[in-house]
Length: 268
Image (cartoon, rainbow, N blue to C red):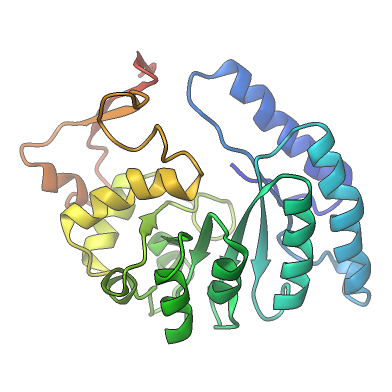
């Protein structure tokens, strides 16, 4: 879960405090990420450097003091935050012990994937406009390429991230809903799995890997999540299907019939 819809100190802290409160109330594991660099707010459009400074010198230290986030994300995209601005913010975040993530190369290629690999980011998300050099950089790194096909469909875009090229090059690929009010109002991970097969050209086994162990790695949790194995946390989802491949086949159908987190059944 990410902040990023306040773009000023108190609003960003409020969102992260809500996540922290929910984490104490729910049995599910919540991984909070600070996304104060989601956009440059209108009042800072003519003084971008001042907003970057605010994020680095006020927001990140406040988030770290209250232990409100595990990671920090930046929307690295032409017209949003440049490569240099993104590097400055994420370097500051790492100085406070936060993991780093990037919105990278979503609509235009700008070197976001290469920056993610350079910084050792947990993930580079979106990647619909990733370059060949970006693909090679991610393949040579441990950064997970998180692809969000529902977002591109909702935005009316006719291109998707090159999932096949990323996997064939050796990159780790995950899939996610990108659930948010602006560009991806869906909570259905099975729908995203179906899009992974139909739109991204992934095999069914690759889709399962993309929403389990690779998704755990994108959150820094692969050491004990994402596999059904001895010593791993029993986070399980049961699907009411006759063949395992049907989970990524039915579009818009809720095939999940039961969920367990850490071995405990979740309420229906």
